[in-house]
Length: 246
Length: 246
DNA sequence: CGTATTATTGATCGCGCTCAAGACCTGTGG
DNA sequence: CCACAGGTCTTGAGCGCGATCAATAATACG
Image (cartoon, rainbow over all chains, first blue to last red; front, side, top):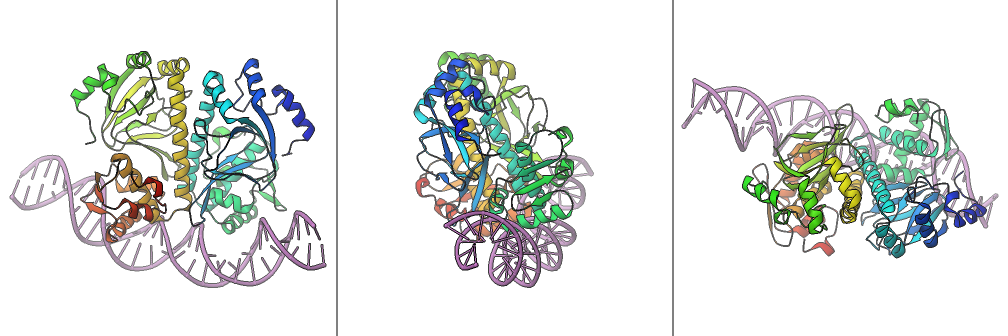
């Protein structure tokens, strides 16, 4: 279930403590009084699947946490070649403290609910709330690690390994814990291709190859199942030794 | 001139104010009293070209700033495929606050001088010094932008564009400002290939192609000249409109 | 239904990889 | 001073993976 009910939003609006990402987002380590100050400057906004949230260089008057759904960050060359540079899932942060513009195009891959904070007030709060600043530093360093992991994929992995790696990331974030998985892919074939530095045709071919090898199941356009995560790890060119449970 | 004299090190050791990266490194925004506390936990260390500073997963008992020279961060797959994920030049920061181990292999590309801080003390200082924490956040966000820029290169640029882009980055960091450039490349062909997701043969071919096109000059193994940065921008698939001066 | 969008599958092409040989550069010892 | 060794770099020949171009199939939607 990707979307959030309007009635739920009413609930979160009043109390951050009821928020599904309360303990994972940028506010995770905030004390009750700090949370209250965040509540004062937040507002929820739903973006429909396919909508552009911001273009490269646009003024971005807010920072935000992804509450539900999936958004993407991407950069393009003048001739239209496009590379996705970030995949934003619930609890991920949007915005660059200290900058007033978006560095990347931000797009809603599915319907997305954001918890938006007015930019100036958020930065003031950041400066006066060490809990918030240190949490944001941790999250930024995690993003940096993820980006560098992706550089290894883009520079050195084969098409098959790339596709398997992306499926692993999506499956693990959408459905943590052990056991067989059955999820809805939040991305089109083309969005996957943009993330992997491939074409949509190649993504499609590798998906059917993985299916024919019995590693995954495909139902309809977006359905994905995987009974044996270890096999998917193997196809991704990683050994999931320490991560068997995830 | 990449290296730093031993007599210079004596000078910096006593006074951060004499340090060449004083106003660009993690300590850039520190007040005199904060600087004094950093001075108390710092020590300089020189690593020879080719030396391994840390392996992936090694305990890393320090954080550090690069004072002079060039170091690289890289990740590898089990079968040996290697991808460089960071290029560290003077003023860049090494270390992951909150983690005690290195996430990447750290290698000295040239002789490198580090200003090392003992990890635990540095983290204590980080927690009690907002100036230091906010500077580190800014630097981490800049690193994240650079990593994402590199993702675009790895996923979507041609070999020629990749090589030109790398030369641009090196030239601009080694010799800021306008005018003809003449520098020493800090990287071997193989290191460049690891950064660009190519082979050393392809890097070599593209370098000679750029030379034959009159865009760069190559002297000896490491010498590089470029009279027309705009032409190099063009070959890199970017328009250096706003960056003509750099 | 008809139309538009997205996904699959096929045929062919070309960029960058692989394998291999030779050139160049640096240091070492006779 | 030269001979030799070991590393780095360059250049060539051929191949294969993923891109490109194109046609068809599946799905969503008014």
